[in-house]
Structure formats: structure tokens, C-alpha cells
Length: 487
Image 1 (cartoon, rainbow, N blue to C red):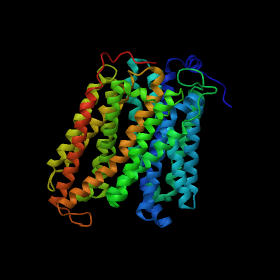
Image 2: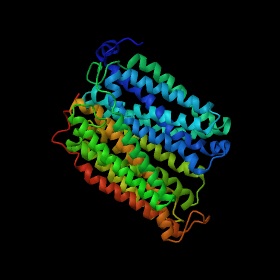
Image 3: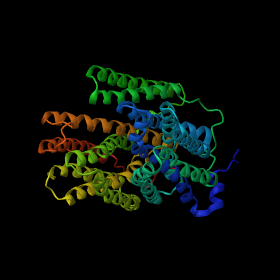
Image 4: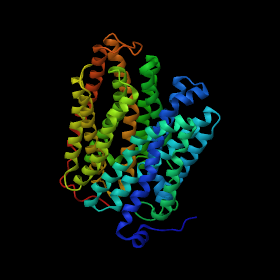
């Protein structure tokens, strides 16, 4: 059992640099969790061949992870209050590492799927923690810089992960992908023992607090599953089944909200404190988070498909085109993080959304004979927009919260962003296939055409319209002063 080490003792031991060491410790674990969510995609073809899986069953390797990660984010505030930062974080890292090892050694697809769900649960618990630490451990004038440095480190994981993963699959097979998280987990566990406090946010642990809201967690899980499967059915299944699943999602959301209100009225500990949405900046930031997640994940799916299927470019060429955009994103996040300490966050988020919307809208200027530099330029413009949003959105939404609500706020806004992201891929797929059919084309046709580009252009315009809608909510992040955050 680790000794009880509060934050004050660690500050005294390590001095002024302590908060940066703490941020580095949680950043490594978060990088591991994000890498585990994206890197497995390069192993799906080999894994499908090994287990003789069809596309729908193979897709659950990704979908199972996403559902588990999205739902488990809601448990982070309760875990932190009950077990403290270190035990919660270390427990998630152990679960992530065990899931990686089990997935790599599994001889049955069911075990691989169970390992992915375990990894998703761990990733969901970890991801709200950094925002809580940034808002509580750093002074107001340092929070933007901390968010920028953290964001820069985190975006490198999905940027370099698939490239390294592709090399590992070619050299050692699909199982090697699962073991890639192990060294990151070991380093993060060592750093957690040195730098992560044992206390809970705000002080001592809850010795005998309320039990976890299992009913709320079940409703959230059912709603998420129904929503994601409903979107999948809309894309390639039957309309009545899709309608029933989406109706189930709506009923689960209504039941979840009603239960959270009832539990709060009885003095219990709801999974999501609805008092959060009484703060206008947080409510508006939540809307931005959902739409931002939809646009981010949707475009991550749409751009490579557009370049390969719409423009006829090779996969390696697509990777080379997107590499400058990834590097620009990392640099932009670091620079904008410093701006967030001096400039209003609502303005930075609004600029980012405007740039992101512009990058989507400008895709319509590309034709089959267009120079490749146009494609690179619009992709870079979109990543600059993301770089403005990433370090600014959490600060703008959560700075006005009462400090006791910061863990709940981080959990809720991450949950909503991931929910938007999980639906974004299906939404883009649905709109694209609808517009392809309207133009008399399909993916079965191996030859690209102006009609196919029109279908892609209309899908990009849909994403641009979503970003413009988010821009309206982002402007409402404005507060009287952005300089007195809690914590």
C-alpha cells in the first residue's frame, strides 16, 4: 500500500517544478490510452484474416473500445473522490496494460474483444484527469500554457502511432500492436508513484461516501450502445431497426436525466451533476464539445477516404499529405496554449471553429486536376483551427465552475465530446453514401468521377455547417472576466 502523500508534501519535496512533473506523469498515461484507441486500426485487416471475421464483427474491436471509453468517463469523479488521484490513475494504467497483454496473447476473438473493452474502460477513466489537474494545480496565468504543452504531447500519439503500428504489423504481426502500450504504462506507473498525490480533488478521500450510481451508468451505457448501433443501422442496415435503436437511445437519455435529478434531490451522488449546466459557459461549451467531436472524428474518417476514393491517391501518398498537417497541429497547440493565458478563451475557440469551417468549405475548390499543394494547404488550415480549439475549450467551459464541480465538469465534457466523436464517423458515412446515391455513384465503381467529388464536397459542406453552428455556442463562452478560475 502506498503511503498517504498529499499534494502539499509533494510540492515541498519537488519545489516549483512539481506541477509540471505531475502533468508529465498523467500526460504519458493519457498518450498511452489515446494510442490504444487509434493504433489498433492498422491491425484490423490482419486480425480479421487470422480469426476469419467479417467486417461487422471486426468493427467491434474499435466500437467496443469506444463505447467502454465513452461511458467509463462518467465514473472518474466518483473514483477520484473515493480512491484519490494515485490509486485511480494507477488502477487505470494497470487495467490498460493488462488489456494490452491479454489482447496480444489471446487465441480467441472473444478474448481480444474483452481485452479491448478493458482498455476502453481504462482509457475513459484516465482522460478527464489531466484537465482536473491543470485547473487545480496550476495558477490561472499558467493554465493555458499547461493545456498547450499537454495537448501537444497528446496529439503526437495518434499522429505517430499508426505509422509505428504499420511497421510493427509488417515485422511482427497484429499481436505486436497490443503490446505497444506496455512500456508507456510502466513508465506512467513509476511516475505516478513519485509525483501523483494520494489525495482526492479538494482534499481528503471520501471514507464512506455514496456508492457508485450503477443505475445511471447502465442507462448511459444503454443509450450510448443504442445511439451508435442505430447510426450503424442507418448507414447499412434496415430503417425500422435503426428507428427502434434511436428511439431506445432517446428513452435512455430521458431516463438518465430524470434519474440524475431524482438522485440529486435525495442527496445522493449522481453520475453527472446537472448543476453543471446552470453555468452558461459550461452549457455552451458542452454544445461546442459535441459538435467539435463530431467534426473532428468525422473528418478523420472522411479525409483519407476522400483522397483515396475521391481523388485516386495511394495510401502512402495520403499519409505524406497529412503529415505536415499533424506537425502544424502540434506546434499550434503549444503556441495557442500561451495565448489562452492572455486572451479570452471564447475568442480562441471561435477563431478555431471559423478556421475549421473554412477548411471544410474550401475543399469544394479541389478538382481532379488540382495541384496537390491546395489539398495540403486546406488540411493544414483545418489543423490550425483544431490547434486553437483544443487547449482553449476546456478552460473556457470549466473556469467559471465552482471548484467542487471541476471533476464532474471534466468528466461530462469529455463524455459529450467522445459521444459526438463516436457518432461523427457514422454521420459522415451516412451523408456521403446518401449523396453518392443521389449523384448516381457508389464505392463499387472503381473509377473516380466529378459526380463522386460532388458527393464528397457536399459532405464537407455539412461539416462546415456544423462548425458554423458551434461558432454560435462558442461565442457564449464569454464571461465578464476570464481571470479568476476556481482552484
